[in-house]
Length: 119
Image (cartoon, rainbow, N blue to C red):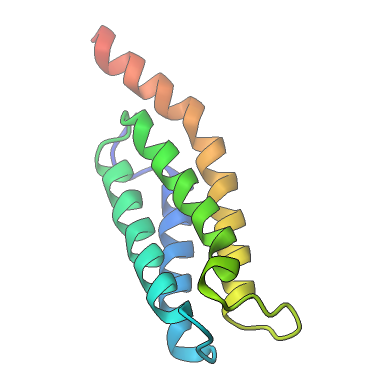
């Protein structure tokens, strides 16, 4: 598999960017700014690592774990307010998108890893 071509990783990067940048636009609640900036940047970095080295299967699991952390972060960070479209919804939607694309990327990543070993 070629570097920089996997759509799943580009989607994860876009989700991380959206979550991190949303801290500028949504009203801060609890620890939302710190958590969302941190997880957003980590998603961007993990996506770039996956794009540069498509055979690192463990990074797909790291992305999935970051997505799960993003989903549960509103409750941990004290900003779970489903009545307003704000930080909680950005975390839930961004986290769900990342979990889905990470799950979809595991098999192609395994194939790329196996191809790298056999060649």
